[in-house]
Structure formats: structure tokens, C-alpha cells
Amino acid sequence: MRKHFFITALAALFLGGCAVLNFYKKVDTMIASGDYAAAADIIETEKKQYKGHHELLYYFDKGAVLQMMGEYKKSTEYLERAELLIEELYTKSVTQHLSSFLTNDMNLPYEGEDFEQVMVNIMKSLNFMYLGDFEGARVEARKVNNRLNLLADRYDEEHIYTEDPFARYLSAIAFEAAGTNQELNSAYIDYRRSYETYVKHADIYGTEIPRSLKEDILRTAHALYRDEDLAAYKAAFGIEKFETYGSLRKRGEVILVIYDGMAPYKKSVNRSMPTKDNSGKKFFVSVAFPKFVPRGYNVENVSVSLKSRVYRGSIAADIASMAVKNLEHKNVLITLKAVARATAKYLAAQAISDGGKNQTLGLLAGIYNMASEQADTRSWRTLPARFHVIRVPMQRGKHSIEVTFETASGQQKRIIEVDLKPGEKKVMPIFAYN
Image 1 (cartoon, rainbow, N blue to C red):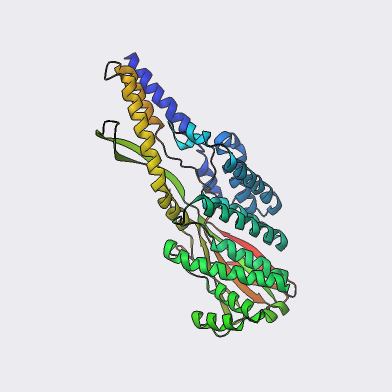
Image 2: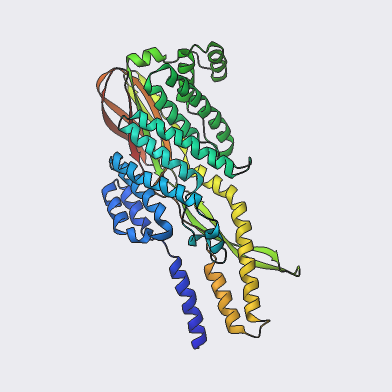
């Protein structure tokens, strides 16, 4: 009786130690209701849960929620700390990974998914844009280049996430805002790279190419006198008329960035997998691997009515689809590691039991193996499920912009007040989590 009680207590103790960040439902509720300050308070109150291996998630969540609150400089401070920690974890010894082999990946410091690491610089770039600091946004664009190059070097050519079209798109906007010929050329290059990546991602993630991006390519090609390129893109896009660069510089432009829905979360999924012992005898082990669970979108369509024209939004980044597909691709390697780990633990338990002579120790080892087999379910949950972008050229001065959202629960409208200077690009966020 005491033996069974001890075994049960051991398993419960280990499983209890695996519980992590159990306050997210409260954070989700506050974000969905638009009470971002309350969400920030919960994150701060539960800060102790982030300590140790989950520290990066604290900087992720604080940076995201502060952005929702309009505290863009403070948001950037936390995202910079996230960026520094990612760099630190990247350069650390592989001994940490070896130490997790007989337990699970939750015992490793969380480094972030590849797209989450890039999202740090995207979120920082947006902060700078919301403050009108396009030079700061351009710095983040260069950091995105470095991060994507690191990812390309880390993985083979079969890896599906080595470019980010939304990051390139924001980079192009920041370069175009500078207004110089050199920066305009950089903008044109990034608009094209963004377009090429959207084409590639359409097959992988099912995302569409924003119509506004096609017009951006035409506008910058025209301004740079790239006549052959302009003719080729006109034919490819089926677009003849577009706002010229000179016209846009005389007026101004409002760029709305819509945060739609909430990012997916991970759950642990167990599967029985075949393996072999040293003698070639086949047996099955239970392995755990992570799976992203989408939480759906809120906005089906978004548009702006200005005088007699309607400007429609485009999906610029589908984070939910990206997360699901990237992890499915990555799970091939995760499953191989999990099978090797489960096999090693099973054989260790067999050795401990000494052919059944020491049944108690063997049973304890088996319970430990089952209890310790858990997938890494950490992720950046305070991101949106996707971003929409609407670009609206307009005359200088004060405007009241009516934004119309088509949602599952019906049509919603919001009024955005804008004061625009001649030739100014003003980037503004709209949060539509629920």
C-alpha cells in the first residue's frame, strides 16, 4: 500500500512541476474585452511563473500588451530585452539540450519559434512606425535581414520559413517614407522581395498577395524610371492605373494595421511509436509532440470609405497558419528526438528493473518515463492571429475615417481621427481581437 502511494505521489509531484503559465485564460479574456491594462496587470502579478526557463515569454507578453496600450516606447524596451535574450540563448552551449534528453524540452530555456523571433523585430518596427520614427523602423528591417540569414544558415534548403513577406513589406514602407532616391530604390527592392515571398507563401500557407503591394511596386518602379519592369508588372498584375509617387508625395497616406483575432496556442499530443532495442526487438513507446491549436479569426473583411472611393484591406500576415504549418514541418525532427528519448528512458527502466528482479525500481522508472514525456507547449500567445493592412491616400489636414469591419457577429464601424501633413505617411494600429 505504501509502495503504491509513494509511486503515485512521485508521479503527481513531477506532473505538478510541469504545469506552467496557468494564467493565460485570464489574460486572453482581458485582451478579448479590450482591457489591455488589466491584461498587463495579470502578467506582472504572475511574473514569478515566467522565471527561469520561461523568461523570454515574459518579455514577449509585456511587449505585446504594452503595444496594445499605446505605450510604444515601453513596448520596445521589453521587446529589445527579448531580442537580447534570444541572442544569448542562440550562442549557449548544446549541453543544455543534452541535459533535457532524459526529461523533456520544457526543461530548456524557451528560445521562441523561428517566426516568433522575427516577430520581435516586426513588432518593434511597428512601434517605431506608430511613433513616426521610420529611421528606427529601417533599423529593425536590417535586423530582420540578419535574423532570416541566421535561420537560413541553421536549416537546410527544405526549411519552409526562411523569409517573411510582412517584414519585407514594412521595411519597404519605412524606406519609401524617407523620400530620398536611394531609399526609394531600397523600398522598390523590398516591395519586390515581399511580393516574391507572398507568391511562395501562397502555396505553403494559403495566403493571398495584397493588392496594395502590387500598386506599391508599380508606383516605385514608375518613380525610378524602371520602364521595362513597370511594363512587365503591369501585364502580370493586370493593373493600368495607380497612384503615382509624385501624387502621393503632394498629398499624404494613412496606413492602418489591423490586429485580427488571437494567436494559436500549443497543446501536447501523445502518440504510440514503434522502435527497437539493441537486439533489434520491436516495441512501442509513447512520445509527446506539440501541436498548435488555432483560435480562429474575428475580421472577415475590413474597408475604409473616403468620399466616393472604398479602400479594402488585405491580409498581410496570417500568423495562425504560419504557426501551424511551421510546427507541422518541424515536428518531423521533434518526433525523431522524442522517439530516441522515450527509447532511451524505456531501456534505462528495463536495466534498472534488472530483468524483473527489482520490480519496484523498474515501476518507478516507468512512471517517471510516462510523467516526464511532455511536449514543449510554450508559445507567444499575445500576438494576433493575423494582420490586415489598408493604405489610404488622402489630402492633408484633419479627417474622420470610417473603418468598417465585417465579422462573424455582424458589421462593426469605428471612427479614426487623423491629422495629416503634406507627404506624410501615418501608420496607425486598430485592435480587433474580438
